[in-house]
Length: 492
Image (cartoon, rainbow, N blue to C red; front, side):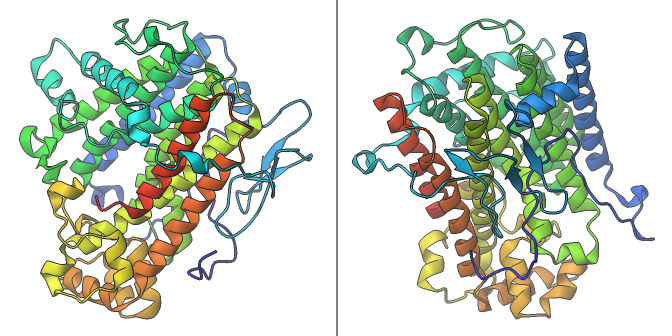
């Protein structure tokens, strides 16, 4: 593991229950009155949607705790998985021929047993996004149709980031469809690669259609979270365009995000799969938890790398992890494979965010202080990046008072950074000073090392899956590994 840690226990992964434990400590100066009203509104709506999911389960006659147990693999023919209350590391109560729990500072998912890794060297030239592009295009078209409404203002707002040409990378639908194919016994047939015009509320008997709808759900949740985050952060741009809150106001942006989450809930309920409903509902829970963690962090937590990783799981990695687990559940995979799919998404999501945090800092640091950067930084970060390339304003985290991985690493070398972090970079010159100290440190190299470790863990989990049933499944596994590499080396 990277040398970056002084922590004595690994960061907690997601819970194996419906409740994510968040320790909230309020100081005398921390009150709800001081909390941005938009943040409270967004958190309340996400919580309300969780209640809606619970009602759906109740109406379906499903015991929520039983569904959660089945969804997370607590019971499997006498084999149980438990989450250590202190570390959150999954431990196997009885041995598995394929997977064993490997505890380390950064591994919190069951890892493949040594010697079982597979490689697909002959497929190194596979283009991951091209493999499932046709299906992802189908998902995008269904998304454009699903957010239509008779209310013009709401329809315009909901469609804002689903318009052709500005959909973004569509990484999450691509990951869902690649994982679906990686675990499939056959390639999708031609009749399932055309646009499905059935309404979101209608059950799809075809497995592949349900997997496509899961990809829709993942993207709906992702875009809704972007709309809400832009309000919370008072962002002016997103994906090279004026943010929705800038164009139509905060209230409309919040309601558009709420509308997308509601549509995602309808599609989720129509899957008629209680374990998947429970797993995906945890994403909404984690989004709320992550935002509250960020709002209410104590001074110690603001400086704690472990706390940062917990928050990163909640705000970014939980969607990738639980989407991957859900598509594995839909595929009828074993609990071990479902755990591996979740672990892959978790590690990939954390690596993605660590790189994103580095990009956020470096993209405008050249303008602020004109540093001379090392080659290793230049390998993964683009000095000419701007808000159009990054999809959001550069230095947005610092300007929002958030200390990310590179800043926390730099604070270990330069203690004078700590007061800036504790006051959330509020004073004049704090942002420029923080960037200057980050550039003087080796924090980018350490952030790259951290991201690389999570990338290697993600690839190891894919290589440890049971042998692929078809050549197409092998191609999709190679594509998942290629995406991991792209996440590490991306410049936008």
